[in-house]
Image (tube, rainbow, N blue to C red; front, side):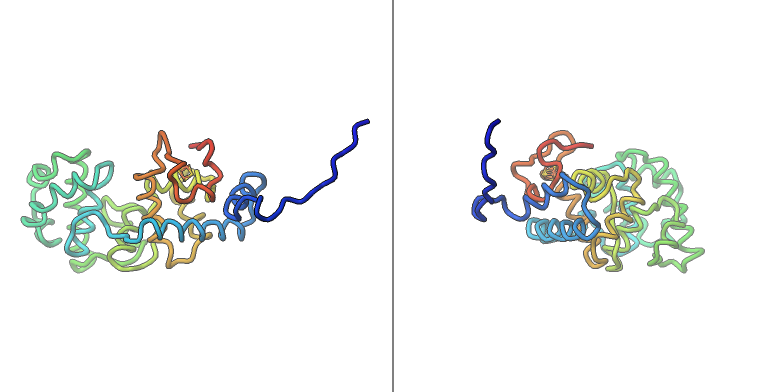
Length: 245
Ligand code: SF4
């Protein structure tokens, strides 16, 4: 019978750093909510270092313009939206002006964007709602915002976070992909992902964290080929060796 080698604990200097061990733990066993929350907090800090600014990339001068731009941004790049909005805002600077526009005229201004017909209808209907139901103002609650045409939770959270400085987790395709790869949720449904992230982070972190996940998804954690070797949170990511969708 072969003799067993005596157990020798690794010297502290030989052990992987704490962040690596934390991610390894996340892979090896199911994390407690507290462990996951601590890891989410560490990820949030690293991302804040890498992406200090969280300015909205959609050009706008007021909350109404932001609302219009976000409605137009569905399945489009921000750059494409920023090309059409100056003329749109110039001709229709208020909800009242936009509510009186013909759908054909709105379509002609946004026709370079995908789904432009549906978006033109949503814009007019949304402007009419603002005039008739909200005294021409953009409301500041999730319940009221999601009553507006063309506005779902994602759009509402952008408005809450960027226009009203209220906590809002924006779950777009990047936020969804990264939240899953980082092991912060197992959900597919954006509303459930939003709930999972909200449990892990303090409300004051919500807007910045989701915005930075989006930036990190665009810059590093690409859908097809994430650049894990360049990733600032790779030591905290349970998917770093073989990302899963
Ligand atoms: S380590 Fe890789 S999979 Fe994980 S967040 Fe970074 S780029 Fe994405």
